[in-house]
Amino acid sequence: MSETICPYRDADVLPLSLGDPVADEIRTHVEDCPVCRERLERFQAESTVLRRAAQRLAAPAPAGATGEPSAIGKYCVVGTVATTPQASFYRAMHPKLSKEIVVKLYAEPVGAGEQGRETFLREARALADLVHPNLARVRDANVHDGRPYLVMDVQGVTLQKHAARGPTEPRQAAGLVVRLARAAAAARREGAAAQSLAPTTVLLDDVGEPRLIDLGIPRDGDGTSAAVPALGELLYLLLVGREPFAKASAGADRSAQREELRAALRGAGVPPRLETVCLLASTSKPGEGYADVDDFAAALERTQRGSSALLWLAGAGALLLGFVALWAFLAP
Amino acid sequence: MSTNSNLVTSPTLLGGLQKMDPASWGEFVKLYEPLLRAYVAHCIRRYNLGLQEDDRDDIRQNVLMKLWKTIPSFTLDHQGKGRFRTWLWRVTHNSTIDFVRRTGREPKASGGGVGPDGGEDFPPVAGPDPEPPTTLLEEHDWEMRRQILAQVKEETQASRKWDCFEQHYLLKRPSAEVATELGMSVSAVNTYTSRVLARIRELCRYKEVEL
Image (cartoon, rainbow over all chains, first blue to last red; front, side):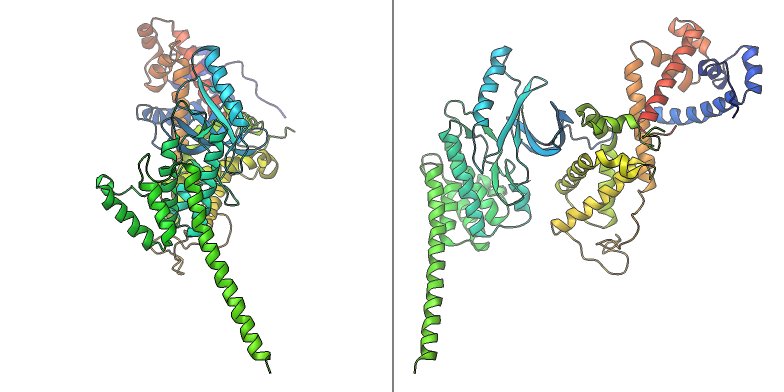
């Protein structure tokens, strides 16, 4: 196969397509050279396209960009799970294991110098020691663009998205919140804390197990007093399918608010004892209601024991009736 | 024969993804995310699904997750079968249908081939995979060209190569005039213009955009 070899470069021929003067030698060459003629045609077509594309340069980039980083350290980001004032949580992939994880990227840069970094890593190591079925497991920690991040082995749908699909059956809702409360208390006993107990910072995994993802080491005095109301609000969200104080009446007086919530819980068919616990937890101020998260969890568990005792009683009653019927049938 | 010779999508970009390299992932997301969003929006309109912004984002995330898991096998399974964006369309289409079924958001099908508000029936009638909508692909190409020009402009602005390219090539001003204005030789204007053009072509090949 014969191939035409052309001694000229693109740069020699380009001026011709732009209407610039060129040496006669090149002009004569191009007339006879199929390679150059093809070049000229391509230049022509390209320039039309590029001039049109250049008109878009002045226009702003199209909307829709999320502003989320595409990678944090070696972890490739797929989307945002939650954003709190302290941190953003991203759904990401482990590059080697192709495994879904969640990365918590702190909003504040790591403290200055080696000491700040060491403090963060020491806290991260403490968090990595937390092992509980309802706490996200911390697997890695590092600093990305000056901001510290934690990598957690957890996946699932946020409680917010779960609730948006409709109310959760009361027994199941109570069970989920009891587990979350127990997990928050366990973290506390280990010197850590669930820093936010929000519908977006709880993930429900594939088998329906709830997991807290916003873990941290509390500074002096932060966290505990707000935990019970936050858990109460999560319980309400699950039972009713929407957040308790989303409505405009948020500023109304407390008794009116409480009545509004009570009506919604009743409308959702929530048993009275569970309703009481939910209201007490979600509308109480610090110092009122439950003493702490364990106290709340115990109260919530009692509502379930009550209902399971009732179920047991009903079952036993049915069995007894069955025996009586059988006896009546077999009796001479 | 090179293993990647049948790939229309740049082997370099995909090659990076196959190594699961975060930089390539970032580039990939930047390049294809607008098209992915447009695909999701198109699917929702097509079947009149009326999903909220949150749901769209879930679908987008699911597609990215699926891509992440399947990209390593892309060259093996899809060699020569078409462009990456056609494949992306199929993944998006199927992920949207999966999402709608899994979350129980299926609209009522009218049974007449056209859905309640002018959308097509859902679930979609089984058949060959639908082709990606050409209007979206055209828009994607224009957006890609814009991104490429913006990138080259940024790369070459400091050395004034971009000025040469803009004045001489895009605005069709004679090189002598541009040379005088920029205080350089005519041959420098021509060389710089040509280099910028070569860089644009290189990026277009890399990002699967036709000129």
